[in-house]
Length: 551
Image (cartoon, rainbow, N blue to C red):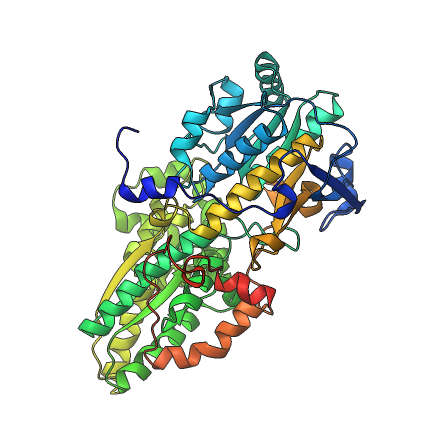
């Protein structure tokens, strides 16, 4: 990088905080707990992970282990979508390794897991690491979505690691990536291959967390970026007083982002997918709920507002889930006949006539543009690309249709104009907040301590982060402890259990207690941009979600 911004230059000097157990470098003692089991399907998980299942939790304390750690040569992989703070995980890993032994080396595999398989790498040096401290993005070494799950891949990885003298790997990724890291650790351990594997929890979606992993990195920063944008739009809405803004937010498998942003900004409407599924709501019922808020505000003269919609909503609506399942089967079986239809209306008619009665009714109730998206957009496996469905526009149009009906009945006389937005990539590579900068650095440093202690099949864990760093607790959690069996592509596979929004959890209950008031009143909060410098109460905040969960 030949030019950097003034902010990046200033942030390069920021020294992330560390838990006290890690403050003295090599003087770290590993304390082991009792053997562990898995979150579900223990017998089946145990059979698949005979070498790593049942490993104890590890907690680090200041002190000296009886055995001095051997020199380490480590490879690091960034896997999956970008999340703010990834560079600080690598920086913490690098500094931690050097604190154990100055001769330790760190290699970065390029473009994600592909780099391990294809032997594309770079040795990471002081110069490289220093250029990326406290920066967003994954561009130091790049990322990728290749899954490491076959013996052939594991053997290629072994061969390439042995050529570089690598005896340890760190996989920085989400639930699928860390599941693959555990499979890799199991393969190497069960085949007596001296390569240990450790993971770090990454995903802005916030769905990789549990009692042991209290947050996935990047969630804090991404939500602050989105909340700033939502706050800006709310202020614009409150200024112009003429638009309803329908905002779709990242989060296909869970609604943590939508909930956190709602807690930060207090919009008029925020849909939580898990609640929709729990109440078995139809699209019509979702629309009716939105219409009630819009008409109530209109009666007060407020023909404007903001609605937050999670990206994965459509898969949580029972009738839409059934429709999508039928579409996947139908378009796989009738691919030839369907491909011969050139006219869009013919395709829609073909689909409608081949669905069962309930799904055909659901399909016909959708706006024309959404029908086309369901028909035409397929992924490489032939499935509907749900993430491309413009749910925000679908709901805006369906609400408009319902309001038109009410106006004809004399039950609504307001004005309804909409603006649609999708906030996704805007938050994935932002410069990390102080929380993510600190948390990520500690995760990387903890990963180095796990490798120094000879651990494999573990995920780096830093807890108690709502407290000052002097009270943080770090250690390692066996990845098998987080696993269950799920149906994937027609087969039962071991995977880390995704964390959904808990409807009995403090964050959601706080939202429920306030949403009726936020709906009709205009009680917007404008968080503004992330603050990196200034008083701790401004710069070192944690998410509302974590704050409420840990109270």
